Amino acid sequence: MASVEEAIAFANESEFGLQSSVFTNDFKKAFEIAEKLEVGAVHINNKTQRGPDNFPFLGVKGSGAGVQGIKYSIEAMTNVKSIVFDVK
Image (cartoon, rainbow, N blue to C red):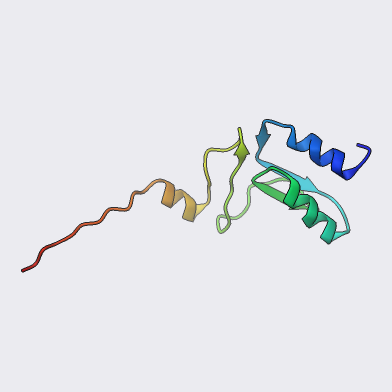
């Protein structure tokens, strides 16, 4: 790629958006790039991977099936129900 902007545009053209990686020593630039990437997770100076369950794991566009992770999986697999008693 001729520029960072061209690389971001190329990545965002994909119909999928699960994860991406950014490798740089400039953390400010890494954050700027991460904000522009249309993906569910951006790994800075590391390969893409399944993260710990304490933060959301999700995809955008044609990737993923909702948000995963313990908290998010429980929320996705349960329904809130109100049960109201009239105790006169």
